[in-house]
Length: 239
Length: 115
Image (cartoon, rainbow over all chains, first blue to last red; front, top):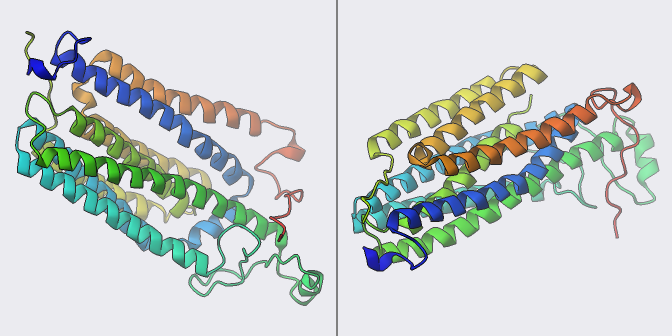
C-alpha cells in the first residue's frame, strides 16, 4: 500500500484526493471550453428562434434519444466498474469497463449514421448547404442558397425561398456540428482512456487500496455524459 | 498510517440513479411537446440539470468528496452560469432595433461563398 504512495504525499488517502481534485480542476476548464459554445448557442437561439426550431425538427429524434440512453447506460457501467475496482474484483472491473467502452462505441456509431444522413441531405454548413433537400423530414420548403449566376433567377422562380432564413438555419447546423463534433472527439478520447485503464485492470494493477485511474477515468467519462445531457434537449428538442 | 476513508457509490444506488436518469430522459422527450418557447426551455434545462446533478453526486462520487473538491465542482458550473447570465443581460437589454427577440434581422452575413 505504501509502495503506491509517491514521496510528496503523506499517505494514499491524500494522494487519491489530490488526483480527483486535479481531475475536477481539469473538468472545470472543460466546462469553460464547452461553455463558450453553449453561450454562443444561447445568443443565436434567442436571435433566430424560428430557424433553430426548423433545424432542430429535422434532427433524428429517435436516434438522439437512443443515443442518450446508450450514454447513460455506459455511465452506469463505468460507475459499476469503479465500485468493482474499489472492491478489488479484477474481472468484474475489466468487464464493466469494456461494457462502458462498447456503449461508447455504439454511441459514436449512431452519431456517425446521423452525420452521414445530414451530409447526404446538404445540411453541412458551407457552399453546398441547402434546405430544399428535405426528403427525410418533410419540413416546410425553404430557401436554397446558391451564389452562382442563376441564383437571382432561381429566386424569381421560387419567391418562397428565403436565403436569409436559410443562413440562419445554417447557423443552427454550425452549432450542431461544432458542439456534437467536439463532444464526439471527447468520446473518442474517453474510449482510448478507458481502454488503457481496462488493460491495466485486466493485468491486476488495481486493488482496494489503489484504484485511482479507474476513478479519474470514470470522472472524465461521466463529464462527457453530462455534456450530452445538455446537448440533447438543446439541439433535438426545440419547439 | 491513516485509515482509508474512500467510498464509492454502491451498485444498487447506481442502478437506482440509472433508472431515474432513464425516467428523466423519457420525461424530457415528452415535455418537448410543450410548444412554448420559454416554458419549453425552462422545463428542458431543469430536467437536464437534475440529471447532471444525479450524475455528479452519485456516479462521480461527489457525495463522498471533501470540501475543497466540492468547491471546485460548484465553481466550475457557477462560472458558466455567470458567463451566460451576463452575456444575455447584455443582449436582452439592447436598443429595440437590435433586440435579439425582435424581428428577424436582415443583416445576417451571407453564408460562405463557394470558393
